Image (tube, rainbow, N blue to C red; front, top):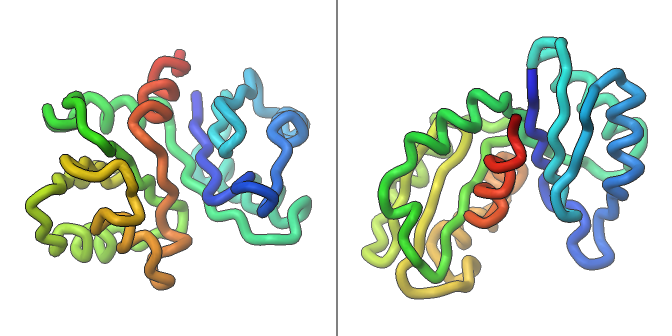
Length: 178
């Protein structure tokens, strides 16, 4: 089964450094195959015959053993990712200043997050709650920190439950799947 691993908040400037070549070697040492990464922000793909629960536990242990900071992550199967991508609303393909997906991490309370996010009532933004992520578009600002969902992401209660990727990264990951 092919998996997508999305690490939260790594390699942001000089903070929370995670070498992608080193991490790829560590994942391969666990027996994962065809380990690849896309850009340096914690987007990895690999193949494993193990079930998702086992893979998530192995990755949790690997990250805790090798890094002195917590690294929340989202772990998705290729089928889950594709299904979400194929069920996106039309606006996801529009030319907007900002399009993002906030992927649920493994420890996320998806129902609580979705309920909170769906309560945001902002006329310049659109929202779609998928299985893997919450997808947002902003018609007016390219700066996600000024968008309501950007402000939502900065709340400490939800900070480690979501990991953000822009539409370009989401589409590239989809292209990289077998």
